[in-house]
Length: 250
Image (cartoon, rainbow, N blue to C red; front, side, top):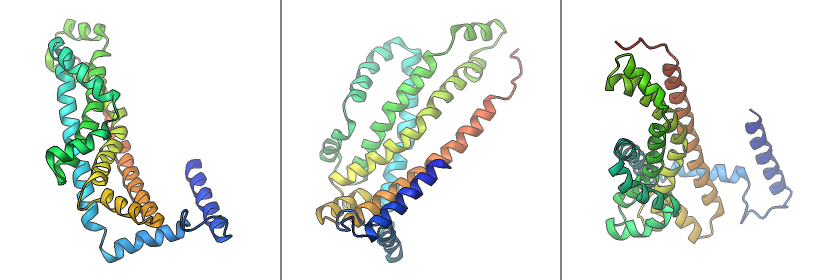
């Protein structure tokens, strides 16, 4: 609640400073003008093809990145040979700013959807790989032995030990993954595209249109916050499921 009040206070101050002529509307247009610009984009229908392009790339990259990162993380966690092969590569990808790969993906895959999905996928997959890998590695060996002593097989180990640990690590990374997915899509469109929010941002930059730039940034932030809220609900539900008492394996 306090954060919302702080944001509202900042917007009101910004609007007041603009009304008093203390801020140049060319460089820092007031929130009311930014809102009118955003409403105009929706009213004219100009924004919809760009929204579709960005959301398609971001969500495809997010979904495939979670799947690929999760599978590779599990393989590395349970196979020392796979870990020796994958961990150096993932550490290297994690160390470099992965958005610099955008021009390379454009060269390889063209300016269409594939290059944007690929960049989002890489950003998300590396994050989820380490979340799953760490989740398995952080499991207490005594818990594994206890389940085996009680007669539990692989199913019970996965359900009662590994899955709760992986879930906690992955859920803590999902919010960051959402931001990464949109970063990959927008940066890819900014580098080279024929449509998308990143393409519109590039156009706004080239024409020095601060109002359009701020409107698009606000729109992206709003959608990311919406996804944050949905993942918070998912996290609360899954954590409530983890808290339920499970039957003893037999």
